[in-house]
Length: 136
Length: 399
Image 1 (cartoon, each protein chain N blue to C red):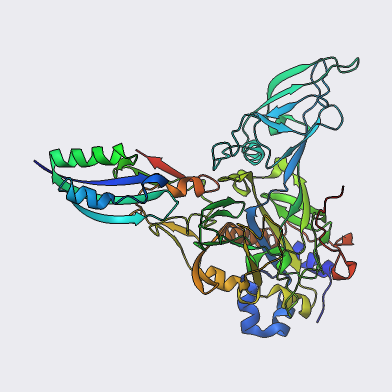
Image 2 (cartoon, one colour):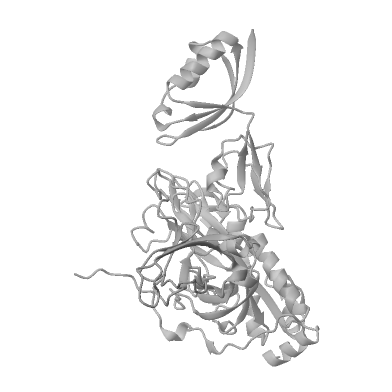
């Protein structure tokens, strides 16, 4: 039976130099579509994938990823802004890898575009008043 | 054309004062010219809302029965330690104080979720705060331990007293190294991944009165949602900093020490905040009125973002090693466009100071003045100006 899921991969530094995409395709026969990726040397990496294929292969592929130390979350989580705490400073704007925070040019208020959010969670700890929350 | 502060206050009392925010005044002067605008305008309201670490509050909680002398022991508000080296029940809580058991940066980068700034925010929100104190016991203060809760409405005094706020200009922080760094300028991504700035620019109080001609000791201000006063020049006040031809400092220059009754203030304008890997602090809302006494004075108040410049500083090496290197200067107009150029690279910008909240403060102060609720004060003494020859001293270690 075929499956297709959207997942978020968090890589430790040690995995950044491994050809994981190649392995998923070659060794496990999976199809994938990279929705977002933020990977640089000596940094923790983050990737959002749409992964599809035969269920058995999908499970083997996921096992391969977790075995090498990558943590996987389904993209069913949700980041929410607590508007009562947000001060519209803008500290989130350049931290977000997917451009989900936009400064409105006239009011200088920060707009949160949740459609662009890939639920990486980078904004949560970068927000000084801690207005960004993860909902599961 | 000149006018006096007394004339302005007379108009405020009658509800006739003409007030503009420091943002609105830019367009007014562009449209009407300096002469006409000076004739029409009485007051310009400036404001800023940003993290200001040299903030804190002092308290007198009253005497327990039997009495305790907190000095010499340890006292905590919601586990955050306060300084008690005063008379028996007076103490000072600093914005960046954190619980003894906070892991700090042992797990790097530390989160610093709760500290003095958060306690101040909770107190002004009307919440009860856990008060635990120990003393060594004396003949007149025999008690050695107390554990109770305090609430702002039940204690004698609670006074916000910030020794350095409202910096006249500030650095733009970048990171030239190849790893992410966590600073008081926020998270700075490697290889010039972002540039963070922290000033309200054209709305910021001291940038609109660059030579401290109207803002001085005793100036009545909006502080944390209540009324406060300029108490003194702030620490590190450095009027001799580099300036552009229009007189506006291009580096961190003047600062304000401010004071006000915490009981009047609001949590919306005193916000406990956390900087990943750096620490916790307090975001403070300040609004300062500038009386329009002369054309010169209005010309300064009408300076716009495009004409105010800030230095770009590398926080991976130059800042921590106290090197004087500056990577360039950019205007707040450029910073607010969302990107600047540093070493030939386009770098996205973000602000740590909330411009939209600063606009709200400037509007609130304007409203108070228009309704006759807020009169302007003549400074009782000026802040030290350029002529004071103050230099910003480093600490050089001696053997």
